[in-house]
Length: 430
Image (cartoon, rainbow, N blue to C red; front, side):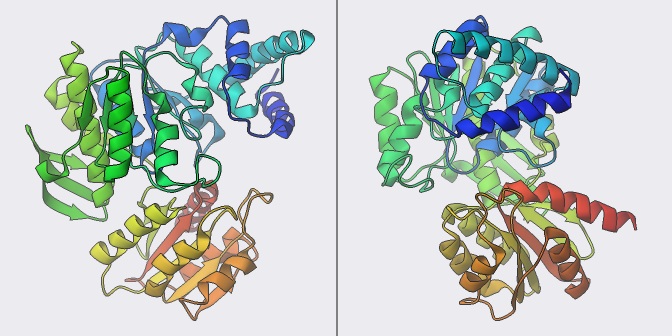
């Protein structure tokens, strides 16, 4: 099987949609020899910030000499980003070989009447196989959807169950209230793990803490009051936290400092368990961490920032960033969102600060909110709005309109930011 054939096969499997539950992936992993049982995990759940927490944790542990598997979704630049070891993506050859083995395992399942796994279940099983074969010391694992019934929750007790910020998203699927959503995500807590969380709303903290107590797990919450911010701008921050002095990160925004100190608590927890993680590796890992699509600057003149803010909380944090770093600068937006997101709230939070907004359709035509519909929502808050026929047309229109000191902000779904990166790269080369 070639890589192209493997991708075609996964596209065909996508007809099975997304199904919450663990029975099918358990069956698939059983056919593959249960590779997850031979791996150590750091499992991350949350609404916003999971990927950044994963990136900091992975980079620090790699710096400390551990072989680290990363499993992430969604991706920005390449489909192969989903599965990485020490920051290097799985090769097309390895990907195709693993898919062939999984396809054969699924055929055996189907022969005895078991249901067909979904694409996400196949990707998760592939990651576990790959990480076991490459003898990873740790796998830093991001939940795909929720926690309790997410395919990644097929693992046993992780070393750490980590929670980034939990807020309202996927309402009606994970739960109708913040408490129900938090309870779902708390499903990754298992007896024998350490629970580490960022500062949460009190009702969320209460649920996580109660679940940790029920399972007999230590509960650690990052302390926002122990943070001393020394420098910050759109390129990153310098801060101190407890025994760590003058740490530098290249991910911008106060929320990234919160993510970073959560990771520091993870690192301290691992050290207490006997893992060797020298202080200089923590400093290097923090500064080296890159996570594209999270308030990332991709062009300087004019300034172009891309950010995957796709729900109310993420929009609030993005709004705080632009007010903190770009006060009195003219803002031009490019927006694209899925139709099941709270796009009205995102527009209400963000668009009063824009001088112009260009709306776009997303590559996933089944889920996208049409650019014209998004433009109608934006018009309540900004008078200069235009639905563009393509992402490329929107980028070119924004660049043509922008003067040197203006800021172009591209945000909404992560799914189209890779295309924006490629378009801007080509324009920059010209």
